[in-house]
Image (cartoon, rainbow, N blue to C red; front, side):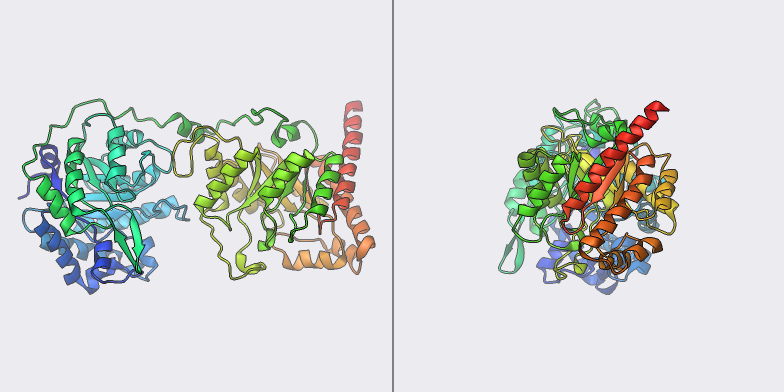
Length: 629
């Protein structure tokens, strides 16, 4: 009988194993396949790797199940074999471990630090399926590794504690600043997991020994809980067509003693490590006398940081704290407020665009909004033009930012650039797929959904980066969300809108509406919402323009009467009638909404100027009427 793992790890340092996936790659097996399927197809290969680690000195083996969950296996068509793959993995590891070594059921993060569209319900279901399969074969412990978010880790450990009392090891992948992606410090995260049943806490992957050591040193003193450490063999380099890790076994041996001095009681390796690295760790720690764990107060009380509390409570941030004019959210609460969209040009000539911005400034609009390559058609950077509008015209820019074009890195970088330029009003949109635009061969990124990009931008307002790192100051973004009321079931669209508001949206801008009755319906359907809505109105330029919008542009639907009035019209006459129709829509919109969102067609900014003046005329008349009443 092996001693109880909890007791053994308190008294001495155990040697873990090293990498499996990258080691198989070094042995000649290709990337892009499911190494977990080897538990069924090539069990002798997995068993041989386990035995090499035992011979190197490992006292605990991880099962070959890091990605053996429904979500990850489904990518290879293996979702029906979750239980079979996990059970086989435990049997293979147990055979290699013999009587003395422990076997830990490895469970990897499903989201992996990405904003993938996996619901909490799916996470619960997938973790429960994998964990129960591992428990069926009597693993000695469960090891949750390479988690980036505390929220996801809590789901995994919650499922474990529903089914077992065996030891649970929880490991985060963090950088030197030591924060989870959802904004918790490691001390906070460890304190919460300790109360939820974790027996060992630690780190793996993402960083080499130095990065993990820096986080451990930040914990400031010995802990009352054993730590586990499984660092990468440094950063991977791509040399002559192969990935190579530079940290030598000798270096790992030296670091192992430092890890043990800092409270590590389980030390192994992650990506890039080999049996040679584990042998060096075992040799360096041979005869090491572990200091007793401290009963004490290193882990903080279980409460999130102030920034997290503020995010969860969503107690209504005050806008316009910065010097200058009030935000559009504040303006629209007091009076009619006009936002005008003027698309950036598709070429390098910006003269007409700038003339339009100046004319709209003269017309008294409150903000000029610039799309982000709308319809996936390449246009000039809205950041650059927004800066020019702000600095040269003196008009507030409201910039669209699409999920389509930038990954997480690029999105945060983009937002930081806006902050540096003093551009603080943005509209978060999904973005039309690239294959429908003028460069159909380009990639659509979609690292974030529209819900997630809103939440992440508002996170910058709390002084927290997308990575969870603290920033030196807080951003002051006022974030809008898009709403399409031109749907068959308006209540379902409102339900989606409510989720955007829950994510942190401060105001709403709708797709263009061409039916007065729909404007009233939108007002009634959204009356319970506590953030302003800017109703979208786009004057039609011609009959062909009307038919194109109705039949080919997603999210736009024209009434039969409008299409009939525009039929066959073109040129100046088409624009004149288009403005007339827009004025009729404004008559209804101004009765029900303070927020007006005018969308300029084809750079005919004169139409938007006319309609802006009409808003102010009608708004003044309405204000006088209400005061007399």
